[in-house]
Length: 173
Image (cartoon, rainbow, N blue to C red):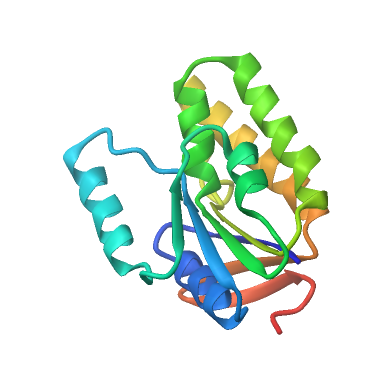
């Protein structure tokens, strides 16, 4: 089953994804997309690493997400990706429109055929004001388009606010 988990910053979406991963009863591979470009982000990454169960396989892949999913998804395994908006930011920051298009297409093409359970975590950024800067507007547009395309490929889509999941597609159970 493929699940897209959306929510705002500090909404509880990652905690829900981690709970669903544990409840799956499968071995877990955690694909982290964040990069430590400053001390604050390095501290966040270290905190997340320290809080993951030791038996989880940890993969850090900021750009080639489809490749990481292909290498880690298998029957009887749950793969948790956290998070797609960091991955998208990494690709936009690389300032390579062709790479962004290739990586996005690779993810969308691969997702329907992946074995096992897939949990995709992403920030919903389209609920606020329209950003004033060109890059931030592009980020919001790209994230919205990505979320719509992923939702079409996922059996379950959840939105999390204040730690409470709202089922948009499928069921929580």
